[in-house]
Image 1 (cartoon, rainbow, N blue to C red):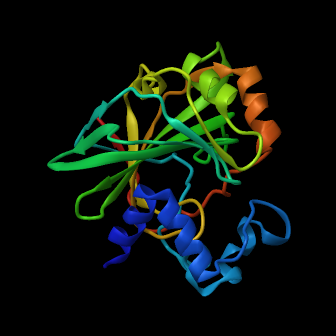
Image 2 (tube, rainbow, N blue to C red):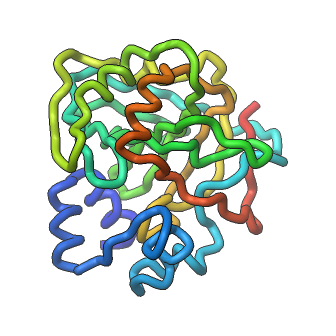
Length: 248
């Protein structure tokens, strides 16, 4: 199995991912301190890409090239998600949750999760938070849709997630159906580039699609997330020789 298919299989199966970590005895990692992001590449040979990779994420979304790129055809399905505190973020696990189509490639939505502050930035400036919708294609290709979140009016979907989110590692279920499309911004301009997972092992297997328009979420809900995860964003990475495209 190639690395894209292996990573996709772990995304599709959180229990499998936990088992793989246990069997592989992957080291404990954090975002700051002794086990922080700047040390990931030195912690384990499996994490080497975190230090030496040339297509790492996140990046600053500036100096993009305007291009006629395939649009995002999003067909996500509402459901009452399982909400997981996995020790690094709050994540909604998806079962038959719809799809993302880019060109002729269809991807299945597997999960979405949150970061504070936003991992991607504009001119070095990050917003309050960012949500990542993680998809996998049948051939193992991965695609992530990122939406930047700013403090403003309450977002009912995010508020319901934070109300259900376990305070410690564990799992809970939403009491009502949530439509993930409510996290999409009104402005649909977006940036595309080839990048990596933003957590160890930092595998360079992700086609990134990040919207250029923010959505509002309530300050109280941002604070509730920060009470669990004060900072869970990786430092910005160099663009190097990649192309950063902005859809026309």
